[in-house]
Image (cartoon, rainbow, N blue to C red; front, side):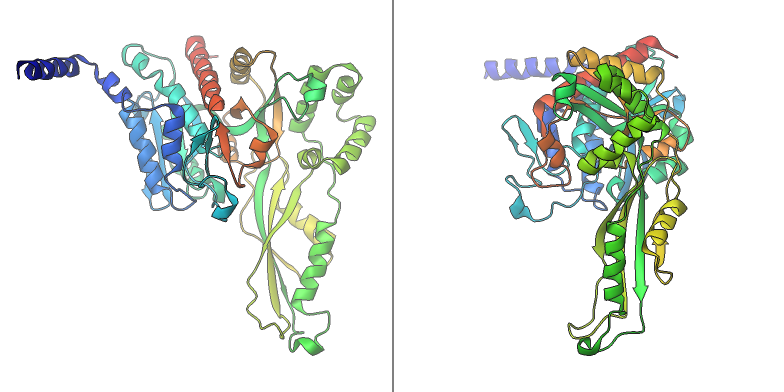
Length: 471
């Protein structure tokens, strides 16, 4: 009995003597374990609430200051900061989205899509790469500064923005943040998802050394609805080829097979020049002159052979789905519609895409309806913070080169670029081709070493920002 009392007394003494931040810290598990738990909370776009409340509690328990931007069903957005936003310190923002795309047919997965299984040095599940893994990297990097911020007056606040609805265009997430909360955040810079590192895609050119791209611009997302109406409808046995569905098939075939013009933007030209310096030699000198006739001829040839190259220099138009046809099988259709997911290069306007589609199809009766609008954001010119991030990457990955890049996909980053602050996109990890192919696909995964190296990169970056103070 005496031993039991002694044990209880010692335990109580230890609890009383333990600093509060250490108690909170003990509630946080390893990056892989926390990501596993996060993945297990299914958060398909519109159903983010439970996952948002889970990760906000993790942030609060770790000592970060959590402030909600909006808290509605399907539109939970919050920030987790070192200091209260009311202090109005210049703020370095990290961005991550809580929502994920649907898992699809569960039978296509080797592991349960919302199981968060940790196996073979990887964390498996929907959202592991896009984008919960990045959120966990940002959290652990920032958590390491919590104790320091208690006793040291750091020049910058650092905030993680957790948002909803990125996968469905950002209307329930970043659009709300930018419209209602931007000034409160007092942002100096935003780091979001975007480029990454590779030794595979250009391995033969870079001699197997890591090449990282930090995105300074992304393509703009534009969703369109195309519709066809026809008075030529009736029994299929006597239908001619002017009914709506026949016209739709012909027009879409024309559009899909139309040639997209090669466009070299300021951002892609900078990317080519930077890559040319890394490569060197004759090829490198050619790439450093992206507007020369010989480079353009070579680019046109490569774009025909390589879809990635083509996506970097053209406006991508993808047929994503058709409208529901409720007619009987033996009844020709009087109305049809189709949906296009288009990704426009920086500087391209909504009307430019609409005009291209109309000119390609040459059907004056087609109706083209934009379901979203392009943000009209300009690319970020690499500056002080770009150099700090590049240095942090090079310290972590031996022999790495870092270039600015145009990301051929769309992210929430353009919401913040449209407000005029520097925005960079980087997943601070070396990714493999199968890893990239798993995004929005079956068997999505992130390597545990990606989590660990990414945390070290962001910690170095935050440290260099705080140490260097204002640029």
